[in-house]
Amino acid sequence: MASTQLNATTSTPWESTSTLFYNYTSDEAVNEDDCIYEEYEKYFLPALYSLFFVVGFIGNALVVWVITVGTQLKSTTDVCLLNLALADLLLVLSLPFRAYQMKHGWIFGEVMCTMVFTIHYIGFYSGIFFIVLMSIDRYLAIVHAVLALRVRTRVCGIVSSLVIWVLAVAASFPELFYIRVENFSSEVLCIDYPNNVKLVTVGLFKTNIVGLLVPLSIMGFCYSMILRRLHRSRLPNKYSMRLIVIVVVVFFCCWTPFNIAEFIVALHFLGLAPHDCEFAKRFTLTLWITEALTFSHSCLNPFLYVFVGEKFRRHLFRFFREHQSISSSERAT
Image (cartoon, rainbow, N blue to C red; front, side, top):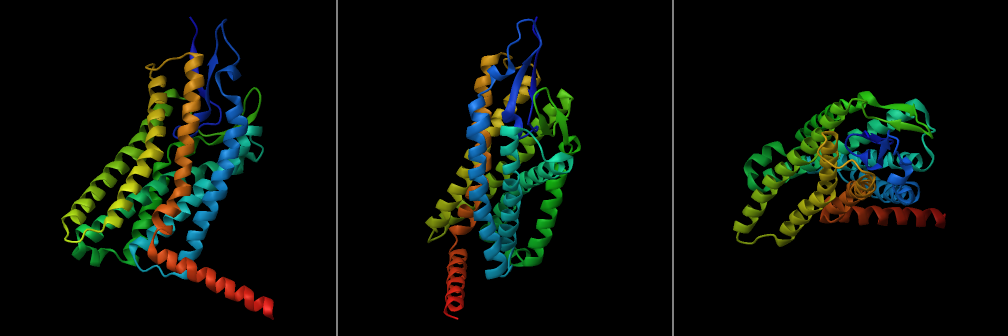
């Protein structure tokens, strides 16, 4: 009877399982390349990741620049916006390396392998955690306005942000222990998954819980209370209500499909999902598509949380006007 194992070639327990393929070890074995969509892995995904890198880097770098240069960190919200942009920058900075590895393999050495996957994990978890922190911040500001006057300060924002970064690092373990460069039959790859199937399965379930279920539950509670308060007020802010709904829907749409796919991978390791090549081929494509959705969230965050804000737009326009006037004066001299 054929024994089948789901192996990760460029994968992590939470996000890179999109490059999983099946290895057949029986007399009826087929070429493992027949069980993946090579045209997507070698061409489409690297191009898509490169696009996400450009858009995400420009958008989040602009947020960091405007917040640090054009505004002052006066509240928890300002601190959260800055740290969210930094977290998204960490995540998108790893995308060019992942894109190159998909097409050519890993050539950057052991040190860069460790650095790239470390910032990827920390950026992943910190981005989610800062979105949760911003949800709590908005909940306090609208539902508990009196308490918010005491806790929504710059100092509290900085302390909360430090706690979030520590939690993000902690959530990245134990996967960070397994980052390494390995030689496979056809290429050299940077990987970060354990050889123990049970540990991989635990990591997948951990990602579902820490990366989706807990954050989504907190966000759902906070924003439902906010909508309830706004609806009860005499002059409900329909713009705020619409923005809240958009934030929750975008987060759900970007992260839920991939977490469902990760859950199915965990079921595979438990022997509860199919083990045939056709399933591998279709499901790998599903993983690639849903993983791309998670990366797109880092590109959308600047527009959702910052660019739509009146205060940020005002500082952004002022920044460009000042920059344009400086450039004009330099040309005149």
